[in-house]
Length: 103
Image (cartoon, rainbow, N blue to C red; front, side):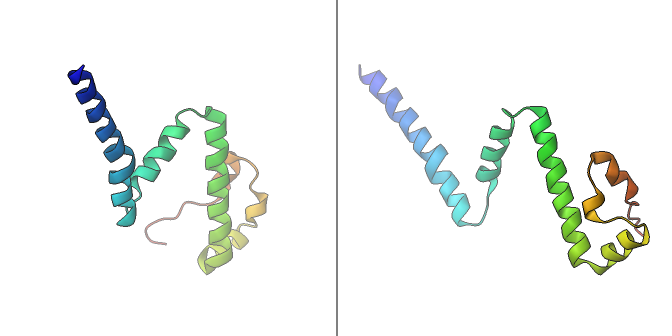
């Protein structure tokens, strides 16, 4: 009976430290590794097409932000007659020329 109580105490301590104390410690230091781990674990359960849609939308949002805030990217997109709103599929990203180190 006493060994069962010991096991329960150890599991409870591990849970409290592993799920609450340690993540809180990192969070207060500005380190979000446990948040990212939690997000990653949730993504493992999602279907592949949902993840691809999420990635596409995030990439499109990044391109739109770059176009609206960085003069270089606005000039680049305008020179090839592409607006971020023209990007409808993943293949549309191929129209954007790669950025070289010289650039």
